[in-house]
Image (cartoon, rainbow, N blue to C red; front, side, top):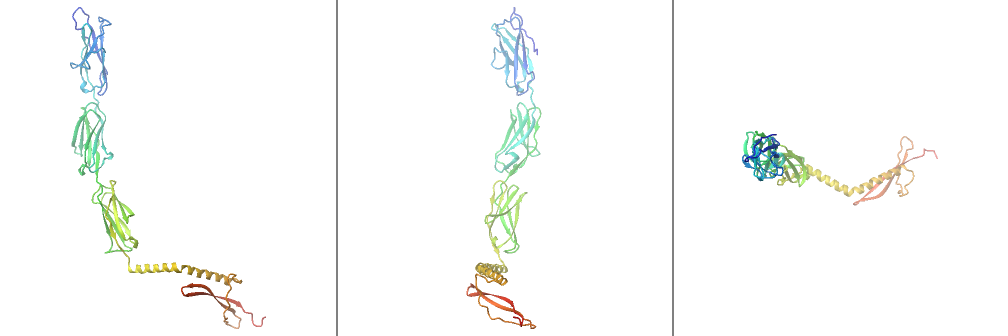
Length: 398
């Protein structure tokens, strides 16, 4: 690009020299680099003249003044670097030439795609902790002005300007009133870009719960169904409640919207003791004070329990004796079926026989046998009696 021709500022006789200033790129963007080149086009200058160069913007010398290099590289240009540029060249003979001025306009990149993030992530902050609102832009150049707003009506919280694509706003210790929707905006002179609304919830730890035991009547009786009611007066939902009997977990219940929760329990004699509950919403569990409960057993149930206890005691004491009697009975039944005698025991002598006759027919001969099985319980002796029948021969038969 030909920027202009100039005449050497020298006294005659000297031939005019031409300087040409170029910029690459010619329309630089903010944040990028730019290179200025000053070219000498004059046949009258000797090849070994070794000219010196100097670059100017709006009447101010750039860099370190005169240099032997015909190029000047600006690593990063911003919008304020826009202006009128030219260069000068001179030789050891003090022959000076100046290039025409060129206008360079540094192009800014508008802010785009602004978003708001929270720290901690998710917008869940415990009461008293620090909340950080980070406003981010995907692109944008130059000085960017960031603003933070609270609520849909846009209560301005803070505004700051800095040369970066992100900025932070901090609330050192949040309170209940900080539960709200927030958004931010960023602008670098091309119009503001606004983020979406982000909800922030201030979470409050569950307070120490109160346990209430509700019984149907004036006292807790075996068979009643009691209600265990546990409630924390404050705390962010959801809250999970756990119920305990003597530190043994009975069950749990949830309160998704806050408040309290209940647990129903059927009473047995073993349910007497201390009860407690626990509330936890993820910010640390809280335990209630212990509530004692005495379960009353009705008189009829006491009798049944007493009889059951006595029966269990008797079975425990007389159980072996009863089992021995049953075994002996079973053995004697088998003896009655078999003609052979039990080799393990000799039966005692038979007792006197009693005969009855019916219709002149020889009846069956009945025989009663008593046997002492030597089973003793206390001062009592138990015996077994069994009968055998034999068919008597008819009269006249031999």
